[in-house]
Length: 83
Image (cartoon, rainbow, N blue to C red):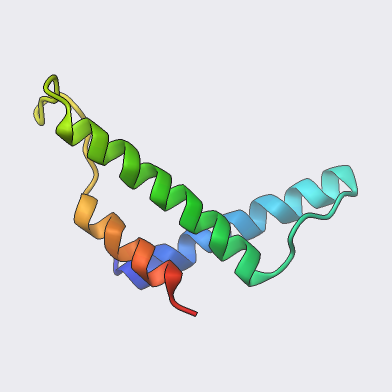
């Protein structure tokens, strides 16, 4: 999966979640693509931060801890930053 496709997938998940929440509660949150893109960017950035801390940890064992491809996540983050 390319970073561009993964970025779109994350944004689409936030849109779906927001629409479901809005229909269940009659509340509206951000309804724009840009709003959801920012939500996805937050999510990816948080995941990167946690993984970087884990990789720096002295107790980190790459054979026991499930590590995502950190470089791929960084590419997804850069894709989300594009207008």
